[in-house]
Image 1 (tube, rainbow, N blue to C red):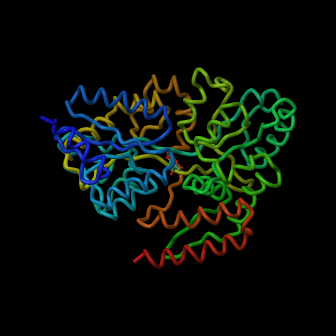
Image 2 (image 1 turned 90 degrees about the horizontal axis):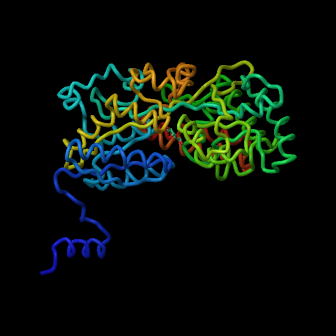
Image 3 (image 1 turned 180 degrees about the vertical axis):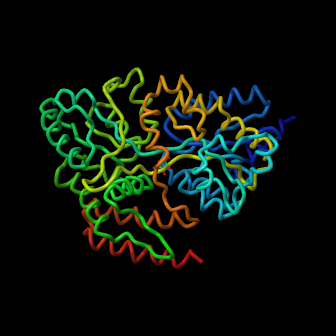
Length: 428
Ligand code: GLC
């Protein structure tokens, strides 16, 4: 007799899996992306969870780019698929997911399991995880933009501290790039995320915010076209074209992982990235191991350092048919023990306050203490259901300005006009 599963498999392959989703109880699908080492850690944790609970977890692997991760989930949710049951979400798109009613409230479960919301950063929970009075997600880690620098190269050139202003970063870069290029022709002063995607918005907020500008959407009005933003954008462009301390592929290719690898190979003096890069830079086979430092991002002469608030939150699909099992998984991932593991193994900043006082953590990741302010005061992106539409418009114009295909003043003016239309369409 032909095995039933084989028949099912053949049918699934033939019809392209539509309608062929699992549903044995005690099996959940967890959708997650990120750098390759992150998936390895998830696999280990999942094995532990499976032994502990008897619930099987299938990983649905996603790319690293946040925009692609969102698109993958939106397709499944719009089609009301029961897979994936549980997933990580960027803080930037939680508003959209909540307003679309795609997320199962977690309030009852949290109450039953005595999960103390007070253990998490209140600001983050209130900003991102609550929607219309319901808890719709829990934070897994928080991100803030940081400056990585080559301590050894600064020392070699008699520079004691990392740059506090963008001007200092520029001067150090010009000087050290020139000297390093004698032996390493591909050496650059500063790498950051300039490709057309969400990461570019995070970088823009940091440059502009540290000049008193930013993305302002208030009372139905948008303000992008400001002198502060113009000056910041000009500086971003000049880093690539005028001063040439950032590589020419900054606006075509540079996302987190491209930037991280460039710096890790020893090809740059400064890098803007999220906390996850630290552990990888410090790994055994990393050419920059023990040669780096980490600090808050520089600012314009009259401004203050700004780090964009990032981070990933876990939630359950409204269409899941294994919600209780998925809730168990959320309880596990956000528990103090697993949060500590994720921090130690991946260098992620936990959203639980208690982990920051842990001795092992402070010993292994000393910058946690020094940079606590950066994490606590990180600057959120507008938390709006239509944030994605806003982001897409800004990404496109800023990237075109960096590429030199749109002139700065014209680019900012058109961004304002297009954004105003988005706000009028969705802000009802
Ligand atoms: C990181 C941040 C996320 C941000 C993304 C941009 O993953 O955690 O919030 O949107 O980078 O690339």
